[in-house]
Image (cartoon, rainbow, N blue to C red; front, side, top):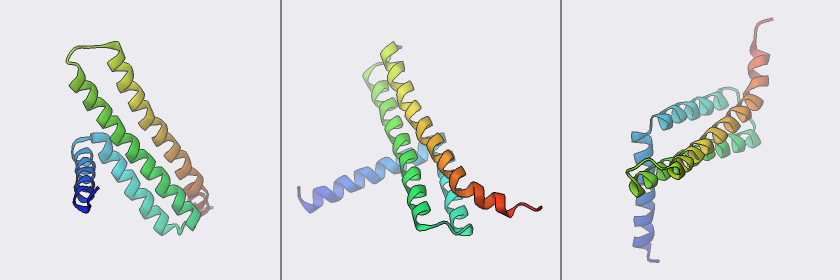
Length: 122
């Protein structure tokens, strides 16, 4: 693969990221939550390991959202009629986003919860 082809592949991938962030309402929510988590990480001075976990789950949620979007569009392209297997494919892809998001929420609670709890007035 030439350098030009690699660059074109990278540009296509960035185009996919931009499409998802531009068109998917849930991706907007996920982006706000990711930015909030990063801001809290900076303010609450999380450790290097905690940063690694935050980056991992943020990436996991966005990856799941992009796979979900691709699945939904591919299914829509494959059939214009209602099909129970199409519904299963879409529901399973959406479930992947849900599981990734709940995992990220739990990680966030484990990282930020004790720090926030320690800040409460007595």
